[in-house]
Image (cartoon, rainbow, N blue to C red; front, top):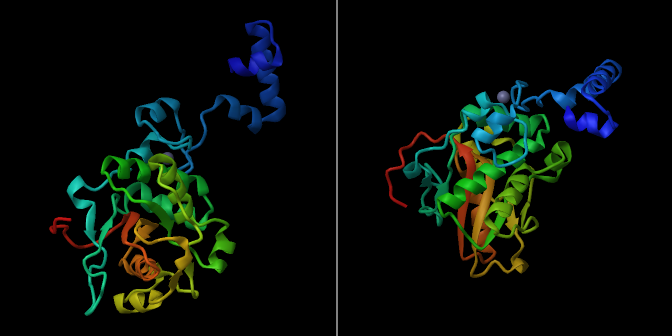
Length: 267
Ligand SMILES: [Zn+2]
């Protein structure tokens, strides 16, 4: 309010109040935005400044305390698990671990559909900030970051690749460079979440990726980043393509997911 009054060159409290009332009456919503806290982009509730400070919000994204309280990571010893819960015979990446710090629950169960189907890109930015911070504290590191790409068709529909937005935020926090152009989808695949049987999910993404071997992947440890892991099949195929193109090591990283297995194996 003070800033508004100052901007208008008001010379006293009465004049300031009058200017503000007039502005509210004349411009309604626009002026109200100057004094009311912004709405939470997940639930529409008030996103208060005190809550932003108390939750130490890593990005300038309006979220309310109620939503922020539901950002709860897995316990530290449950964040690594096998990439494929059902590896197949002869799978070369059988022992590859997946780093997945958050459950697909609470905040993410609301946020991920909003990112994917309502174009809320800023939620992907916020999620990337969370992922980068937790990776840093868990010492999950590498030489290059590669996001799992979308098909051309889906990229056109959505306007952005959420995995890439998340990857760029992780890069900002960790200082590890991102290469967007290294992985390509070789064909259109169905949505993994719409396929029920695990066999069909696996064949849906088999050989769906190709990596550019001219990207100097050799001797590099690649952090392969996606938003959600369900069966791990998408990441498995993308990781296999990176290894075929010469990557030394791939660490698949999913922001969130639910897996019905206990992470008893030490990685
Ligand atoms: Zn909220």
